[in-house]
Image (cartoon, rainbow, N blue to C red; front, side, top):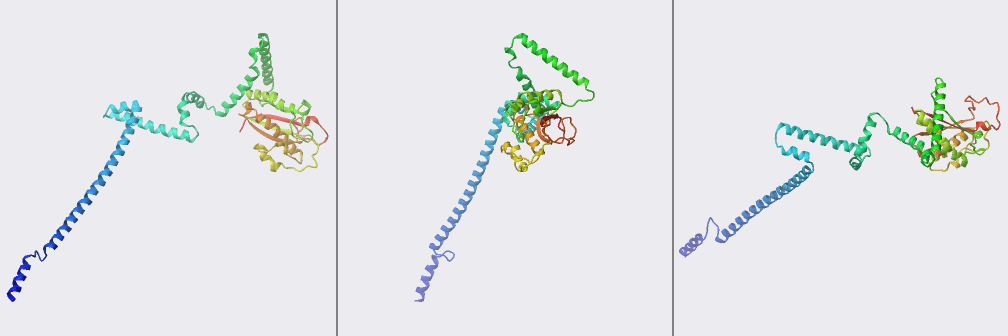
Length: 348
């Protein structure tokens, strides 16, 4: 019995390897194979991801190179410099070209910030070049606009001169020369006086306002658009002026029984948002200002006077027709004192 048990134990030991059965050994081998396969898969996946990343970088570099090649092909000068390959001289030329390119881009960016588009720089390059001598002579855009307005105003009355007979054209030229000679004599005879003349528009000269009102009559408005505007342009051509002051004067008759809305309505009238006919005043100062404002609106609408600064002022009844302070000795109806004075001066 003991011998039988010993043989069985010996046969069992013959099927063991390191204390494991064949089935256990097979399972261990399968597990090891799976671990090895997993490690290989992870390594392969890592290498694949690295390859994809490298491929994307190469594609981006290729696209950038293609864009650079296209840019160089559009610029023959840069292409020629690059074809010269290495060398100190060619390197300096390339650096200089690149510096100019960067500076040009900065200049274009600054011009765009000032409202000048790239298209204007490209399409109007000749015009910019023609304006450069004017800029070097410190000729401002305001002076150019004023000169154009004066030229237009001077040419306008004579556009139909080509239709006139030759004798009438000659007579017109002679009258102009005579007027210029008279004006020159007046200037030389006035010692120390170089101020522009004052334009006086009074009721006595036909420039009427309705009693106690600031609306312009049709004749008054027509005179402002024609003879007065031409006279202002003539003065501007003779004097270095760019400001037009319109001063409203009244007589000494008091204004009674009215409430003023100037403080409330003047901003809207000046901005063109409300009708000036709705203004009300309680004294002669307000009446003079309202009348001056009515004249300013007509002159400001004239394209020939766009280059000038036109200002409304009121002198009320404080200044007499002779330019002196009122003596307050006559408070009746004086047509000559109900007037508009227009003065021109140089801005500060």
